[in-house]
Length: 150
Image (cartoon, rainbow, N blue to C red; front, side, top):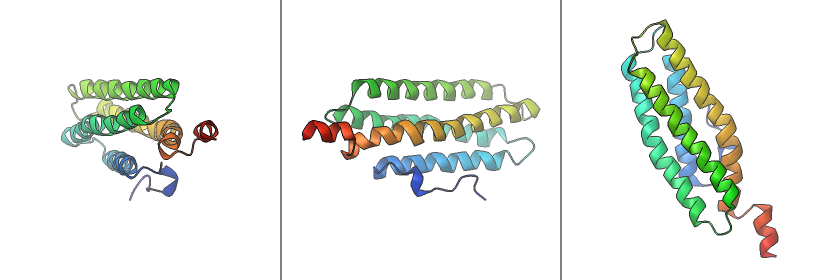
């Protein structure tokens, strides 16, 4: 049973980015399933963190390239977006550091809960807000672009 079911409200309108976001939601669901066990297995938590490392390279690279290549993309939005990407990378590295001391006990479950909470927050705050704002520029539907071209 999924914690979060993929829905149209998550779509930003860029198929490649939407597919990557869907992978992140699948990972969030995987973590949720791990939390059902009293002590989530270290290897499975490590697999999630490995996915997140690869995800940051692929997904953030896709978004950042599109932002730089989109005519009229605002510099302040680019900088804000990049700052949030760096924060995500730093948090994943922090969780990886914690995993090195993981012994499959109560404190480790707390760490997995923290990771789950972070990814849930990221979904709500980053994807549903800044990624949707960014995608309007990619799709040419941002009112500022429409006004400038009139």
